[in-house]
Image (cartoon, rainbow, N blue to C red; front, side, top):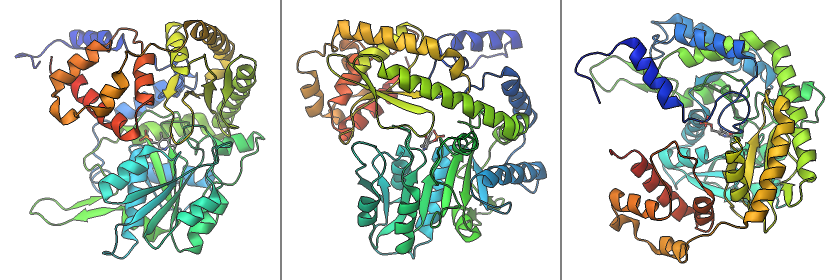
Length: 478
Ligand SMILES: *Cc1c(COP(=O)(O)O)cnc(C)c1O
């Protein structure tokens, strides 16, 4: 509600603090998704100060605010320098992985002559939904290619076979988010290049981790801009760059491709518009926050954090092998681990059990023959808590085994499968949710196993339709 008269600052800030009480903690490593903690509070505090310093600067016009050009050049050069590019590598600082991917897809689309059949984007089924989103927004069709069922890596032969005259872009992940494995980038990029098609490497999650893991002695296969045939690469600084959210870098192998990502419009009587990103007016806080974090940690800082994350990952992999009924999917190449369970142990029940013990482990639904699992993103802070994490995993697994699979109300899955969602309004959908025990008032410790089990039993298109309805109800005025 908008107050008629302004409220005192203390009062406003107290309300914010109160609202945040039910959020998951952003520091401490007990939330193994969404947030990236270095375990060094002073780094995050410095980034916040830099962010605030540039809060009101508008990135819309780099000629009005030359500081943003200087900062962006420095950030791009720093990232390119570790990801196979030279100091002059063309790049764009964006608000996140999704925006970087959106722009890479736009550049690839616009590199093709206009007209003809609808262009296609060839991607392994493990590629991030940002490619589906970009394709949806930009009028492309996604061709999803099955991955190797054992390693979960993209199958280069199948990828090559999927390339046609309609292919505008070929995608590989380094690593993929779901199982944290690196696709065979050299083979995929070579296949794309042989057909004259650009190849994007999605290193959103791992781009700022893999170079440091390699320097720390880990065996990291080639994945970056130095690989022949790779034409663009995305790397999120708000993940393993440990920068505040709103920070990603998109690199291009050549400047003509970067120009295709840009957008200019002189089709109105107002100020001329020339944008490097989807956003037009935008705060310079994220750029300053990312720049400051890079400066504060330096190469040595990132190397140490990467070593800690790698050690935590190995401890988790070894520890999980000793917990009956749990197994790691594939052989993780970074610090992302997916854990599946064998019946009667249910991963969704396990996630709820871990939540009761103060840990958030991210559930992932089964897809394309890949089983449901829980996902852990391990960061610089994870090593300190790895013993507790393994203890919680073992206890939660035991409790989940004792509890058995979740009790889904009889006929619910069938009812949802055949439900005509267009005939139900948001109020009706809210009642439906309440009837299966989903509360929308926030704060409560949700029992998500039933919801996840139901979603898991439905085809992706039904999952999507239900999720859209859920969001609409969640934001409904009450
Ligand atoms: C996080 C992620 C993205 C999307 O990034 P956002 O910053 O959430 O928009 C894309 N690809 C991969 C592999 C990711 O992990």
